[in-house]
Image (cartoon, rainbow, N blue to C red):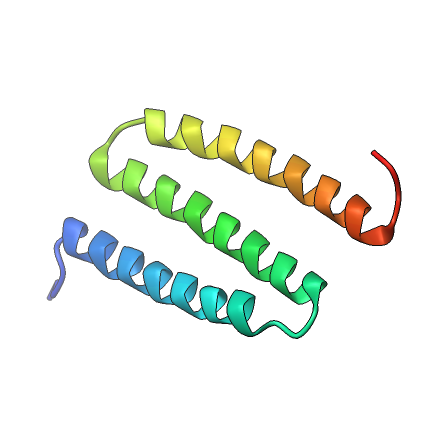
Amino acid sequence: MNFFSIPDIYLVILGLLFLSIIMAIIRVIKGPTAPDRIVGLDTINTIVIVSMIIFGLAAGSVIYIDVAIVYAFLSFISTLFIAKYLEGGEF
């Protein structure tokens, strides 16, 4: 017996991902050091990427997945730059 239809499952997954973002925001606010805050922001970026992919699957549209790939690349590059800055190196 199937209790959820496919869109309901996507809504539950997106809701859980939203709760995960809230927990990561708490880590960003309460983080005692800068690297803790950066890890929290990177976690939020990763959750947003997964949310875009899940939304793209639910909507049946490939454009969300394409945007998620570009967003993941930009997030990776920005994390590298921030890590280099925190290390004390020059760009």
